[in-house]
Image (cartoon, rainbow, N blue to C red; front, side, top):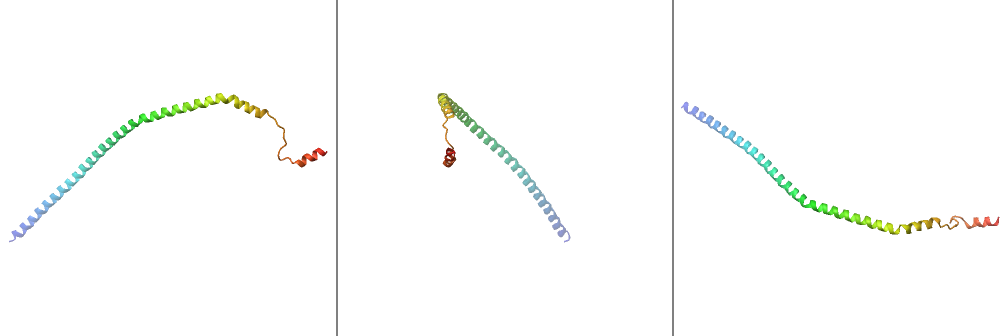
Length: 126
């Protein structure tokens, strides 16, 4: 009978070793799955980034022509306005200059509005 309890203990020890081995394999499997998941996530992220960069480049290329067209239109409009302003200046510069000279040369002697009539009256009497 003495061999029977030690045999049960031996069976328990073997079962414990087997359980430890299974737990170790499960841990290794979990660690490997985490590594695989990380590498797969990294690969998916890179693929997503590549797709989005391609979409952005396509969007940028499709709108680059619009930007240059707008720039050309703005430059043309600016040139037209400058030309129009120059034409108006050329046609009216003589008239404006004449008006300015008339105002500068035109002299109308008048008393200042702050000068009181009483002061004038006193000067006339003397």
